Length: 101
Image (tube, rainbow, N blue to C red):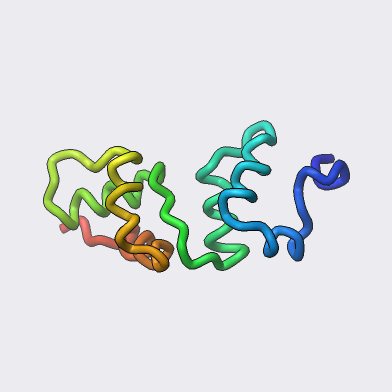
């Protein structure tokens, strides 16, 4: 229904919106959070500069990579990840795959 009402853009329109515009628009829908939209941006729209800082795997990967006792908070990781722009999606991909051993 949200698509019919124009709240969810079609693929061509979504490609024309910047990341934050699309996030703000779609998180207004019940049950859709920032993480969900970030996954859409990464996997469907192939955006290269998305760092899902609320993602457990990304935060845990950073913790293991750096040998930390606790993973960084989303706020801390957002700040750390600014240095990785414009390739934050690639950074997230690698953080998801940091070995556990």
